[in-house]
Length: 118
Image 1 (cartoon, one colour):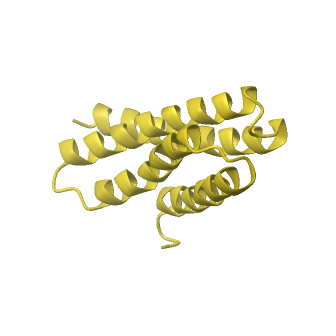
Image 2: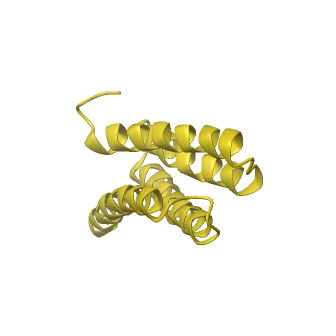
Image 3: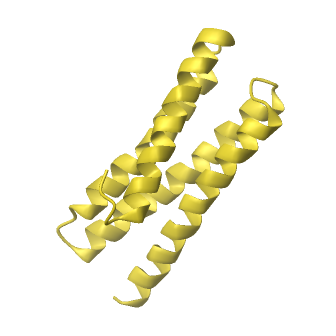
């Protein structure tokens, strides 16, 4: 992943962590439903950021970042649910929630700036 775009790099690294967690939840905990939802939303963040980077207009860029932002919120929901249902340790969940929150804050800032510059 390119070092030139910190958001793309952070979201890519986050997606790799989510994939590892998904594999662990499937193998060790035999949890398939919630972890699949987490996998979808957690990897979608970076995918939509990649699409935003190839946007053909400011509106397209803003729409893709907005989707990524919403996916990060959904990911935090699934992580909290997995933590509160004892599939994830508090430490592991909180670390990933903090990472997702960092991505959310960056994207929210981008959205504010993008929408102010219309």
